[in-house]
Length: 219
Image 1 (cartoon, rainbow, N blue to C red):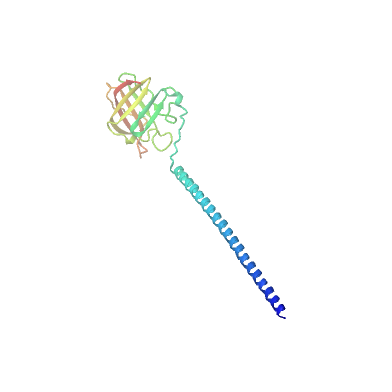
Image 2: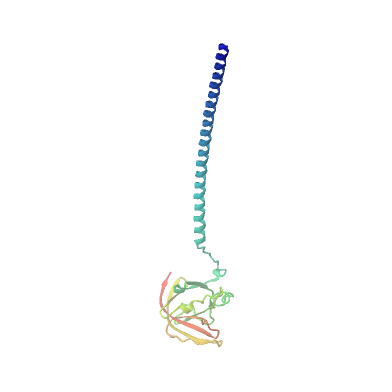
């Protein structure tokens, strides 16, 4: 009887020890699994944060590029179809005008295409002559004289013709009614440049600018 009880105690003790070992082993493995899961999760989060930062930097770069494109001023170069027919140019720096003119008898010598050299006028190299130019004002792309109204006495204009640069100064500005004729008041003993256009904000008047030659240089 005593031996049977001892055997039972030994069996129960053995079962308790085995059960304890199983429980401890199970906790150990669970802890390892938890640690491994935590490590992989942290690693994944670290990689994810790095990718987000890189993406944010790329977005910032794109935004900066977009901003610079929005602020970029695009300059267009307009090709003048009549350039090959020009024999000279008129320059007025104050109003950023630089435009060519043709010969008097050219089919392109008209205010509907260019600055027109008025018939019966003289080219700049004619002594005591009067070189007369006319052009549209207003808002159209043909309004080459649209900003002449900004000129005042003493302002300069330049004619480049046959390798010479002629410098003129405004000495008189006056208006006349549109009647089909223009009276030009100038000193007949001086070389003169006359510019004619419609008067700003007027449908019945035209403005005449008289310029006298100051100097000639070879270019």
